[in-house]
Image (tube, rainbow over all chains, first blue to last red; front, top):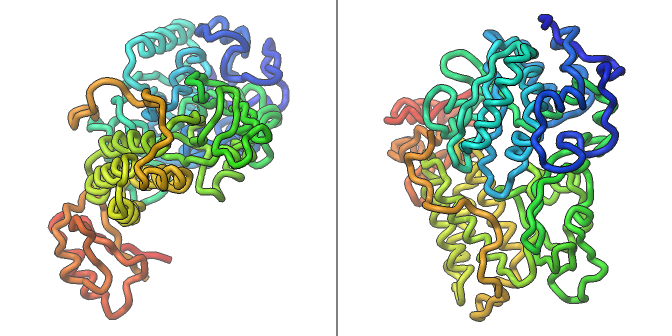
Amino acid sequence: MTDSLTLPPAAPAPGAARPPGLPRLLPAAGAVPVDLRAHLARHGPLRHAGGPGRLVAEVAAAGLTGRGGAAFPLARKLAAAAEARPAPLVAGNGAEGEPASSKDGSLLWISPHLVLDGLQLAAEAAGSRTAVLYVRRNQRLHGRLAQAIAERAAAGIDAARVDLVPAPDRFLAGEESALVTRLTGKPARPAYRPVRGLPRLAPGRTALVQNVETLAHLALIARYGAAWFRLAGTEAEPGSMLATLHLADGRTSVTEVPLGIGLADLLGLDPRAADPGGDSVPSAGGPVRAVLVGGYHGVWLPPAEAARLPLANAALRPLGAAVGAGVVAALPAGRCGLAETARVARYLALESAGQCGPCFNGLPRIAAALDHLAGPRPGQRARADLERWAGLVAGRGACHHPDGSVRFIRSALRVFAAEAGLHDRGRCTGTGPEPFLPLPAGRPASDADWS
Amino acid sequence: MEKLRVNPVACAGHGACAELLPELITLDEWGYPIVADQPVPHGLRRAARRAVSSCPALALALSRVA
């Protein structure tokens, strides 16, 4: 292995044909884990030549943004990491605390070597000889990843040593500053960060944290180049992404899609077949009452509106929504959106790290008020309280947990306004007894579960 | 120009800041400070500095803004 890291300018690595369409990150068929031999047979070895500057330029040309939810341009982080002294600690983030998302776990299980390739590239760009892979606690997954890391060590292909670090099973475990705090040996709670830039490990050292899917895309851009990466996606938001889909019939899948794909295509929504005046839209999984985009910090959209929108921030952000980490859920007709949102709001309140007064005081009260609104004849008080508390918590935490939680809850009040009107009269359209949106099973998280 | 900023993790809701600088800081219904989103006016700079130095949790800071 040479010290420098270069990209093949236009030509792909010898022996590696450019994979044509999607999927890029997952095998074309099946969910069989890809071992190192199969990985190298498909993509060829990671080529190193030229220095971090070339990689940063290629990533900038590719326009790859973080796939963990924030969609921050990777090239800018890599450039900052390349300049930071001492070399930043490099971490791949596979905490995936969002209960409705399973794309990072699937990627790590099926294509660990793409992620590990990307982690090596990031470490090399940052000038670091070590890297951390931070992954949700799961024995089988950790065993598989330890095996993949050992395979690579035996083959002698990596310059940076990779340590596997378990992430606590908490919603906020993957928040960037929580990850960094965890790496300093403390509980994985978010930290107050008044200064922008790379997060800081105490004392003095910065960290380069990237979502594991972002790293996998990086490994492909290093091999096949920016122009290839841009064959999928839109001009403003190039490339593909992994999405976790929850269809209205309960089916869940992880699928790789080009950015900008229509939500109607993703869910099989057919707004033309909707009943005039009806409040649901037919889809591949049955009639849909509402569409949740962006997970539990995301927003609900009415199905007819969702059917006109692409999975792209350019279209979603003006509506206060975002692609996030690619969770898209179709709430079936016959489910009460207020009841679903109230369940999740309770969970989000319990997942407050308990550090910031407005968050740990406000979220439980907001969840309780929403519980009232999800029940019969809630009265005006609960709604007024909820609105006031929502205004008090947003923007006042060290992390975005209060903001995201309030965004999600407010969108429910907008989209399920007609349902709320029914509740005022003591009625509810919810008929399904089983909860729809996934939440962690078992005992509620306790305060000791942050490490 | 300077602005007041609260470190929400450090802040324990003592409320001293709101007593010393009611012009810019009020308390929410749980006792945590809500800081006016504006630069500290010239006439309040002394009071702002006193509020910062009086915070028992060292959670209030004045920082320069462009």
